[in-house]
Length: 361
Image (cartoon, rainbow, N blue to C red; front, side, top):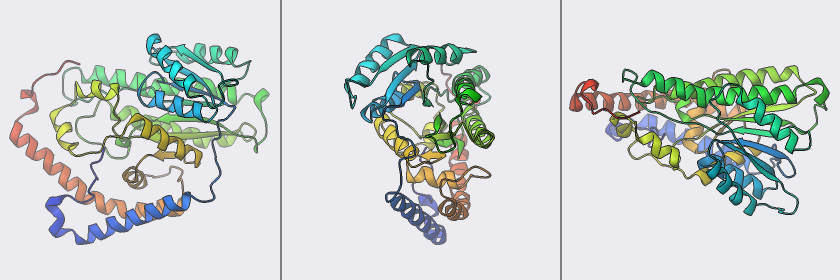
């Protein structure tokens, strides 16, 4: 979400020369960090000849990720519920292959919200992959049901969002880690690491009204990722890297479904935000993973938001992220003033939320 798109609201511009300077300086630091990252970095997640399993791969961001990794030479396993869309996606992935004669592709139909779904998926993947577990697992599958918390049906929506967004990814991570971390799969600390990648949201960095059933499910992923990042130090002979990707709004069928339940205040707060295509988000996410980032953001704005709420999480660059983090809270003071003002104005104009038109969940 681009709630910080202009960093300081227009209504506060006459009062905010200092925050504007801080915002400009912060952006400058972020740009310097990005420019520095363009030189001398190794690829921390090579995929050529490696097997990548992707959930939510039949549409949207997951499909784009699969196609782009196929172009880089990866063997791809696509996981989703809809067999028809999986078959269509597989054809596109095969067409994108860097080495069609040697690369291998497969789809597996599964519902990530079902308990213990991952065991069967990983078993099938291992059998297809010559007895070896996938080298990289990217949990993209997700959903969003924006609602106000007091609305009828919000708790059911929250449970569904948690089942898909959190438990779907948590179950997959636990199942694949049991394979990767078993003593018989020990290698060397210098071996090419395995990668588990979660897909969260920038709402994990900055929550707003209207997403109460959704946002907690993505916050939970961050907590799991940070915990696993710490736990992986127990397995020096089974190197595994943990990552979280934080996209904002993506143009996809999921976005259309999201808008069906989205409250008016959420539309109001999102006016003017930039919406990225699945291809763009996939490309930038892969670039961040290749750079070795623990938390991967796909815009400069997302990077600023990330640095403002890092706490004890691993930094991508300790110096740059820390410096940016000093300034972001000052900017947030003005952003929150603006957002809370918009919410108050919306309430005054539209009345009590109980009077709003009801939407089917």
